[in-house]
Image (tube, rainbow, N blue to C red; front, side, top):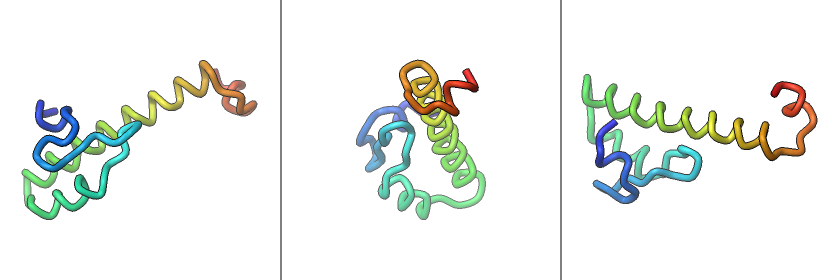
Length: 72
């Protein structure tokens, strides 16, 4: 992932909490096409899924939702 993607607010993009893509992130995709679009989209999705993994690990460690506890 590019260094600019990791820094909040860089190039009009921000890393949302837990990997959520901001409205600016989604809008910025309209500036890309072809391979550049694919790369940017995949970078965003990787960050998004890393956030999902982090949230799941937090739930397993600290959560109170019974069904999640049984999967740990």
